[in-house]
Image (cartoon, rainbow, N blue to C red; front, side):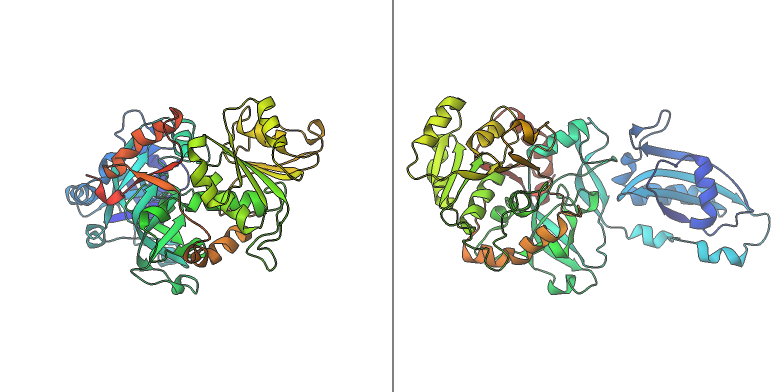
Length: 469
């Protein structure tokens, strides 16, 4: 028999597996259980003396079936899964002392016969086994959609600077192995139960933001989607263009329209009376060419700002003005020269709102703070640097986290995604320019390094997971 146990911790030693056998493998708690662990992958990587379980994933059927057949009729092969990833496989020998008690039947969670294991679907994914480890392509099970979820074949996944920071430093993710990728465009291949999921059908072209959980992120060939924050891609927009949008839109929207300390409290354009509400007013956006900056410029236009100022390399001026920017200022100017450029803008009202889409304390944030009037509100994508309102003329800082499942963000992000398809159809929102990296998921490791080498400007880097060798 092959048994599966879901685990949220590292209690995967043999003693723990023995105690779990009664519950997960239909074995009496009075039976004598002996055995040995074949492999184990812990939160912080491999365990001394044992091979890591990730080597089993590429041939899970053959490995588990072979182990079961060699073990005999009284054996149990038990494997544990955390976040869709096998972390332990052990062979246990069961010597019954007396008949299995019926009263334990209700405690049995999962008992999977061999034919079910033989039918497990697998896919390619880019995995980080532990903090600081290299990206590597591996095989993992294809997830199954639950209530109000969709299973999406990932046609496009986009790279972001945060991907490399997560790999190196383990930020945002508490457990490993981890799958990253927060921008996804793809095709619905299975629809889960539920009213919201029922609005979609197999074959729909959709875009969505990843969810900081392995089964929901984009660096794999199939991912789960929360139907509440998934939108249909209009026919006029390609998978590639759609793949540039999800995380940037959510980040810009939360920072601009959520309440302090999560956003700068603009009236949402998705609410009645919100479109055009800021006519005659000014907003400053640092880092216009970034994907978040481009989204913020387009949102500012929808909100009706008459003056939309941004910083950029001047080669991006024409493109940023096509999105709605009214003034593009050289991002390389020292602060004194930057201040002089602001003074040259005829009729410029005081700037009460600013958005830092880069998060560089001494550059992009310094520009935003310099442009902002006393008592104004500034949002930054960098939530970690120190800031005191009393030391900055009463200016108030919103620290942005665009995690869609975070309670302060849920209503705000769902409001945006509920209107997203019609905003794309109307042309009110456009995707970023992009570059497709050849080689599928294997291209991501080198691609994310380009962010740290300042080799990405004004474009979104994309991969097509189905091109993975």
